Image (cartoon, rainbow, N blue to C red; front, top):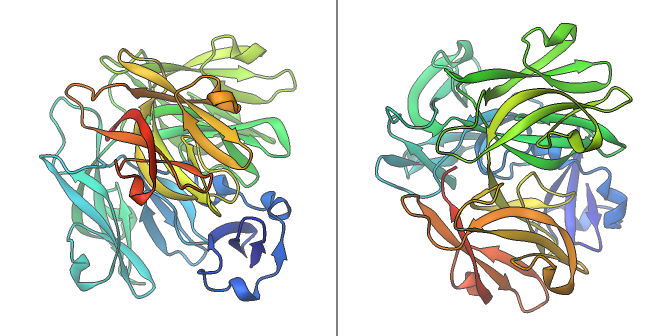
Length: 416
């Protein structure tokens, strides 16, 4: 273990990865860990490999001993993302029911019962749908499974539970997966685009939107492939003769009816590296093909490192751990929306409606929030808050969780 003295964060190293555990001094183990500067541990901390870009959606994780963990945010040290299980509704609506993360000894399991079947409750994960809508968005059935040999529970979208024992149908998720583009910290031109976890050394760069996890008419399958050191996305199941890493979902052949969409182009750098872009000009590089279209939505996650909060859509910066998922914003300007910017003032990350970040450093556009409650869509307000000590954060609570409110930023959807 290591403690970053300047941010007061405890890290634990295991299996070649370094995970943020929690703030000191209240986290156990701080008193014995060597103390270093945050900059010394920054390059070791790899949130994209640790937990994936999957905050905000139901994701299955696994650790080195084969124990599974389903979550929508941070997980204990040592767990790595296996893949997405779909999107939950953040609020309870008619036709939905809660899903809880529960603990039985060393084992985490999911339950639809608020008493966790007599075990301690870890968290409310969100809300599953009781049944799929006949003409609605793609949906995934999620089952609770049990490994009869080990007695270990896990969640799966396979009704046969991957050869294990099915215990129950938990419910249905929206069948969307968050597609994220990563860049390698040692080679910025090396990219990896996936709905799963990228390899060690890759950090989230851009939220590309959401692809279908179900497929069906009007969609085309996407595959993550590798040729030498180059990871690329292909429409061909044989990866054009290269090594297939995984199926990563389905893109739509045309813009999705009634939903804002973004094109996905496969691009090539002169040196042979491939990447995926929304830009038809491939950011100045060579366009190879149009892969399809993604839904222009992304989950907004609040994270914390020490006392500093940050909002993000693609993943967490080094040393930050997920604290709350606020909702979903649009990645494109829609009628009734306004841009929300990521800003920085010294050591404080904050969001602003001002394109100039109120005279501070502009880090980029986070996305677009609704100025008013969108008609016919469940939504939640989001406020900008201040601790009084110079740290800004966003909250869906009007009272700013007991801190100082600086006003309403806008509205986020509670489903994509």
